[in-house]
Length: 329
Image (tube, rainbow, N blue to C red; front, side, top):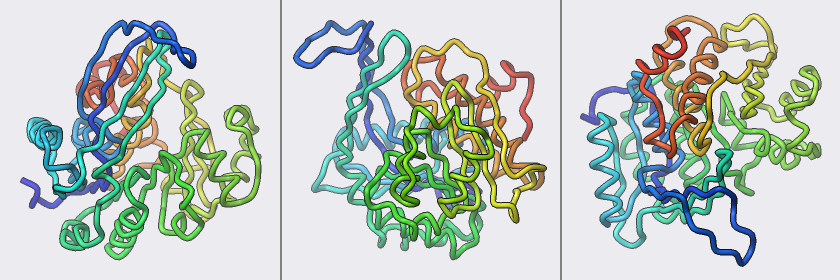
């Protein structure tokens, strides 16, 4: 199945998520009774690949797991989803796990042991370089070792793919040379503020990002040196900034889109749903604007918050069409 050419390649992480529900987060030293517990597949890369395939994206996932029960479960889950994969199975380290606590407002706190994800090798990616030849879009994140992320971006550039980086979770090793390998970056407000400080030396409190005037926010985006910067802003929607010479089919170099109105119960996987859906829309589009792809991604992300969990909560394309009356892609 994974030998079929794919329009989208996701190189990223697999993490087994353990999720606890609570009315409020425990204070330091406090033990609280959980209101519920679930476990299931996660990891930013895997979640984004699931989002892509559920939006009818033609996608291949590349990632690393341990040779343990959780790794076996990951491969079985991907098979049931119809997700084509190339797995690096590692004997020396376990499959990654995360502990996620979600409160009554749908906010979350997360701890993760990235384990096998930090052992993804450039040799493994190079051995699968032929998969990049017919693809259109590459999507990477920062839950793998940075040399593997750089290697994937270099392969994507060599084959002319649109290279997307979701810079999450932020990594101190991200620098201007890595961003220069990207065509599109998709930080949230916290990650954007960290990048702006780290790359451009400009302080901006995360809480002030969404409220900043569009022209000023666009100027901040242009300091990062990436052709397209798309900031996800949670309940405030998202902001798109293009380089003036590359509008990707849009009519304006920068703009905002509001969030869709939903009843959120868990925002854990919303960012991943957004990124995977955006990659799917860009991967299948032969024409149309970047804005249309963002609208579609916004809808998928919003709907994903109405269910608990990460990968399990991501809606299928038919559900998105039923709720919002069709897609723009």
